[in-house]
Length: 96
Image 1: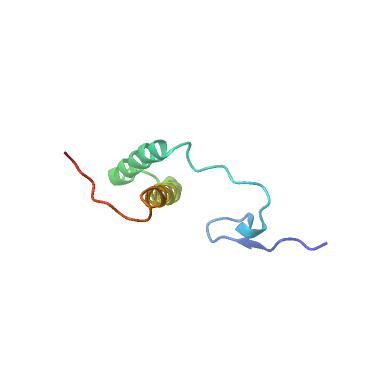
Image 2: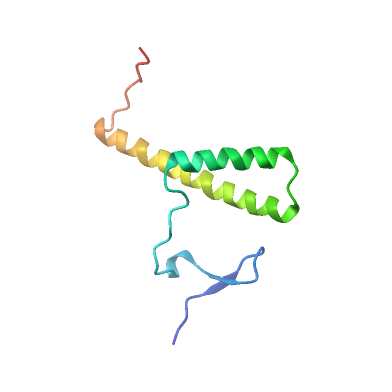
């Protein structure tokens, strides 16, 4: 039986499967954009404080990177929806 290709990440000793080989749907990084942004802001404050042990520092950094990618993806999806709703014509936002 063929098995999906397994790789070891430099930070882990456990094998991980490539994204294309995973059959189970992945859980979202956060329940919402707002929840991700709140958690990201807390992580950044902890990182900026400079009081975390090295292991926690790496864990927090990795979580922050995942949250940042999640937020960027959500914003891109909303921007794409707005383009469709506006018939692909970007219009200036009226603040007044």
